[in-house]
Image 1 (tube, helix red, strand yellow):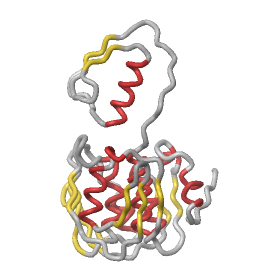
Image 2 (cartoon, helix red, strand yellow):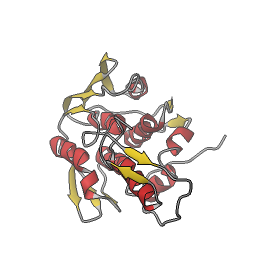
Image 3 (cartoon, rainbow, N blue to C red):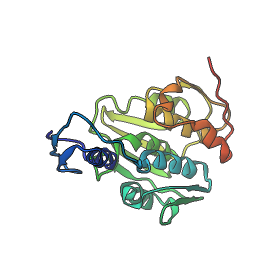
Length: 237
């Protein structure tokens, strides 16, 4: 397999398969040589912490001015996120297996370009676009990796965000802006989570439809957010 993904969760899968009896050369690289077998052995597998969940909840805390402790985390998976937090001025404390987000009163604008691991993950650019609405100044977000990746911004604009679509891969977010509750529709997993975060920061009530898309990447998201103070009600239809 050439041009293989090398993200940590992919390497976690590869290492698990090796423990089950598969022979894999090049774990964690972009070139893999896999020798399969007819049967696999049963083993205990530990799934590594999800950096995308951690990043999303950390952004939710930052945009709402909250204090939030996330655990467990893996420090070596968080470098791209924390480096950007440093640029923005998001205050945090990183422990051995925890990340605590502290209230940040003044957030700086930033420039963000997604990339393959160990670059900034494309799946977090939408939550960071919401974070950019609460930064004082103009932020540039560039996601070159997929087509139509930025076509959720109309929903943020409807909530009061000041966002300019420069081209299909670049937006400029001008802040700081006050967001307002709206009825909106989740377009996909990550943009849907970004809309949940925007709703938490917005004044008034928001209704987010097609939330089942968010469920694909964030288990019981409303229960976990309510546990730390959010006011969310799931309406089954």
